[in-house]
Image (cartoon, rainbow, N blue to C red; front, side, top):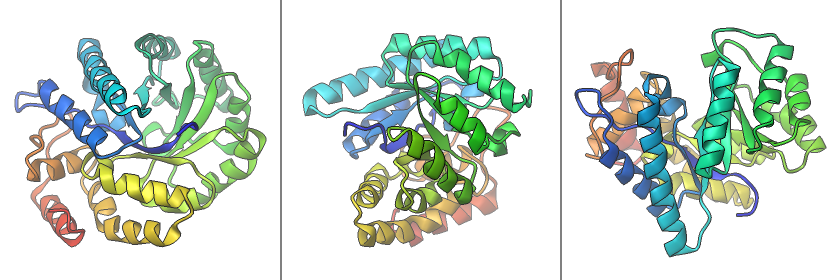
Length: 302
């Protein structure tokens, strides 16, 4: 796949009960993704609990991810996109994380809207202008629900004019805004990738001209998310719809009591890892566990 996109997994970070990182569990997770046919992986994103990880832990995660991806690429002669989370509400740190991603050999760096600071549109533009100068492809991450600030289409259009800005992970939850991004930004920059950040909107967005998904559910079902995404991209809407509606209950349940707490619990039911998370996150409540179990059963995934 020459163009950036397809089915890409926003990886969780497995942990032990003492909140230490389960590195071997992470390695096994990456292997399962690759064996499941996934097009790309995203370590150190929101789903990875990155705000609670130390830089030493992040470096080890990056090392393991590249070891597994490079070995797989060599054995299978198939390109795997590696996008590294590189966001911060401090522009200097975001630049530094982008430099780390570039040094590691990542295909792209995912840079989230600066959070908590609530910068103006001009401040957001300047933030992305700074990271664009690092020289690594940048994917803008728009997720107002976590940052408190939406990147509107006029601002994104301005950002897309910068060098090295290759796409956006659209997690605004607003399909109308996503369509405007395709109609205006992608129309001006045809190679600009519009990637879905919400599993349940993958099919609608691709049907409107989007390019793929950074999926949470693919941590559990990489093969099915890959099939759904590829069918939609290939215009096989019958197959894509069948998979979409099969997985719809799990799309909802995977966020029923937060992310990544809900998906980690689902993975624990299959024995892939423990449901452990690092404070301030806590494991899902009992009622959420029943919702997740029921959804997995309804989707014939357990």
